[in-house]
Amino acid sequence: MHIRLAASGDRQALAAMHVASIRELCAGHYEVGQIEAWTASITPEAYDQALREKIFLVAEEAGGIVGLGILDPDAACIDAVYVAPHAVRQGIGARLVACLEDQACRADCRCLTVYATLNAVGFYSLLGYALEGDAVHVLACGRTLPCVKMSRRFNPGAGEGRGGREPC
Image (cartoon, rainbow, N blue to C red; front, side, top):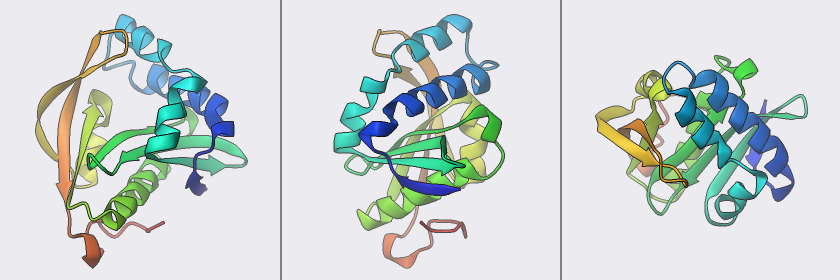
């Protein structure tokens, strides 16, 4: 598996992987109507702003995109980490988070926040993120999704924030 910066030419594959991830991995935690509203806004063009303004990573394997991770270093927030359904539990999500944390360290962030989907709370907990409380994510259409605010503090210059995971 290889992690690199996303490019505009990745948008179509990113959208397909992202929608599949939500539909399969979030199905037991969100209602069908919520998932339909959520995925309706995921188009190739929806990534344009993140490609311009944020740190946007993709994980590739065998020439295909199997994951994405987006960091907003100005807000010290992980905006997204999604893995293709066929590639879950292979360490891809953890590697993406580790790479985003490395980028946050370079930006001198001391704490990262994530608004975790309900199905991802356990994942982030295992990576050392602490629960801060219930939250909501407002979709472009105005519909809301329940999520959980989580955060992780670390010491940026000491390399201690990655929990022993392989840096990028």
